[in-house]
Amino acid sequence: MKSSVARWKCYKYSDYYRVTAQVYSPINDTWLKGEFLIDTGFRGDVFLERRFYEELGLQLVELPLRIIPAARTLAGSIQLRAALTKIKIANLVFVVKAYTPLYGYGKNMIGRGVLNRLITLLKEREKTCIRL
Image 1 (cartoon, rainbow, N blue to C red):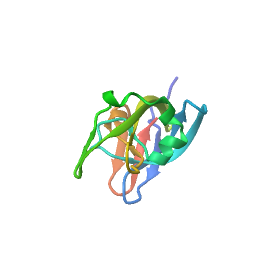
Image 2: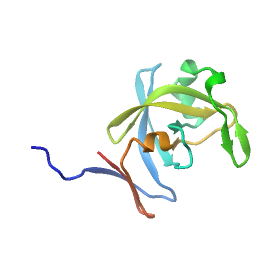
Image 3: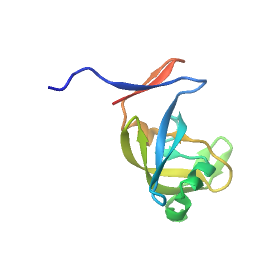
C-alpha cells in the first residue's frame, strides 16, 4: 500500500526562489546541472544562459527562427533562439522548449510552462519546494 504522506524536495531561498535542475544534451547524450530562478512572469518553459545553452549543444538542434517568438521585456523586444530538450527537476522529467537570447547572455530560469506541471510551494523568504 502506498503511503499518503507527501514527499517534497526543497531548495534554500537565497535572495530569490530557485531550484536545481538538470538539462539534457541531445548531442552529447548527457545531463548538465544548474541553478534556475523561478520566474512566474515568464510563460515559456525554460530560459538558459547562452553559455549553458551552447555547452549543451542546443544550437545544433535549434528550431527555425521564424517560429520562435520575440521576448517582450521592460527594455523592449529581444529575438530568441530555441530548441527542444528535457529538464529534470527533483527526479521529475519533462520535455521542454529551451530559450536563449540571440544576442546577450540571459539567465537560467524556469517559467510557467514548467511550473504549471509541478506542485510548487514557495515559503516566504525561506525555501522553494517541489512535490515528488
